[in-house]
Image 1: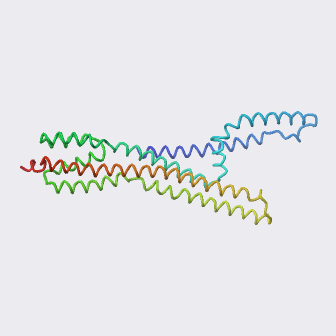
Image 2 (image 1 turned 180 degrees about the vertical axis):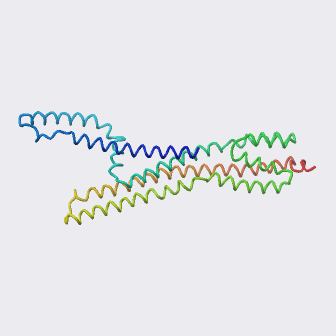
Image 3 (image 1 turned 45 degrees about the vertical axis):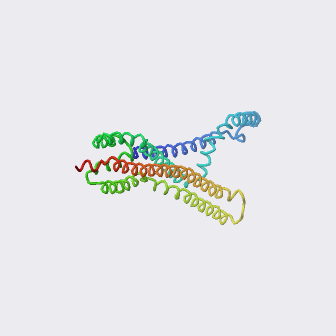
Amino acid sequence: MKKTFLLLAMLAMVFAINTSYAQNEEVDVMEAEQVNPEDLPDDTTTTVEEDETVTEVVEAEEATPERKGTQIIKKFFIDGGGFMFPVLFCLILGLAIAIEKIITLNMKAINSKKLLTKIEDHFKKNDAEGAQEVARNTRGTVASIIYQAISRRKEGIEAVEKSIVSYGSVQMGLLEKGLIWISLFIAIAPMLGFMGTVVGMIDAFDKIEQAGTISPSLVAGGIKIALLTTVGGLIVGVILQLFYNYLISKVDGIVNDMEDSSITLVDMMLEYGISEKDKQ
C-alpha cells in the first residue's frame, strides 16, 4: 500500500508540473496572437480598440470567479520560480505518507475491551487454546501482543511478562515507522522556502548591480520570488505538522491501549491460574 501511495504522489506531482507549464504556454500563445492596433489601417484602429475594450471587460467579468480560486494559487506557484517544485514535492510525498499511515493506524486500532472480554470467557472455561485462537483471528497490535503472551503461558508468568515487553517494543517501532519522513519534510520545506528567498534577493541585487540604479520595478521580481517561496515552504510545513501531531497522538493512544490491555491480561491469567493449570 505504501508503494502505491508513493507512486500516486509522484504522478500527481508530474501532473501538476505539466499543467503549470501548459498554462504558461497557452498564455504565451494568446499574447502572441493579440492584434497590435498600430499595425492596422487608421480607419480600423478605432473599431479594433472599441472591440478590445468590450472583450477585456467581458473576459474580466468571466475570469473574476476563477481568479479567486485555483487560478490564483497556480499563478503564485508559477511566479515562485524553480524552488516551488521541491516544496511541492515535499507536500505531496508528506501527505501520501501521512494518509497511508492514518489508514494503517486505524486498522491496527481495535476495541480491546471487547477482545479481553472474549478471552476472559475462555479463561473461565479453562480454555487457553480457545483464547489464543481468538487473539490470532483478531487484527490489530493489541491482539498480536495478547497472542504472543498467551502462547508463552506454559513457561510461567514471568516469561509472559517478558514476552509482552519484548514484543511490545517491536510493535511500537512498527507504529512509529514512517513518521521520521514526515518530520523530515516538515523541516526541509521551510528551509527550501528560505533558500528560494535568498536566491530571489541575490537576483534582485544582481539586477541592481547591472543597472547601476535602484528602481522598484527592477527588483520587484526577485523580491516576489523571495516572498512566495517563503510562504510556500511555511504553508507546507504547517500542513504536514498538523498531520504529524495527529499521527503522534494516534500512536500514543494505541500504545496506552497496549499497556492497559497487557496489564489486564496478566491479571486475568493470575486470577484464573492459566499458566499454572497448563503446567500440571
